[in-house]
Amino acid sequence: MKIAVIVVRVLLGLLFIASSVVVLFKIAPQPELKGNAKIFMAGVEASVYLLPFIKITELVCGIAFVVGRFVPLATVVIFPVTLNIVFYNAFVGPEGLPFALAILAANLFLAYAYRKHYVTLVAAK
Image (cartoon, rainbow, N blue to C red; front, side):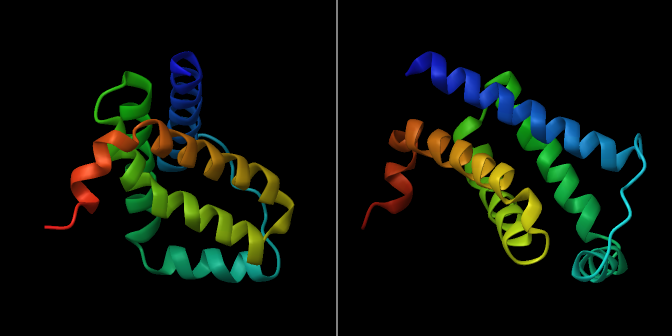
């Protein structure tokens, strides 16, 4: 189990680092979007702050996953981003849904692996 946690943590971290660096530093050209995906991304880009905020969150959490520090916190912080990736692929661009579900499964696996760290968050007082 310990090795599986390390492998999933590092792979998920590298994925988030790579995806954020490509967008933040405009390393690769963005693919041409059509239909609802184009409308959605136009709205995200019109907000000006949202895409950089998401990508910086992915970068910070990805570094935390790779380094192995603050992993329980990074798992909680990145979960809304992961959930939005799944929702985007479920409703706007369904061709990426299997990959998005794999990212969600990896995030949930890490949350389960670090569940003892969340006990105080959900304890009734």
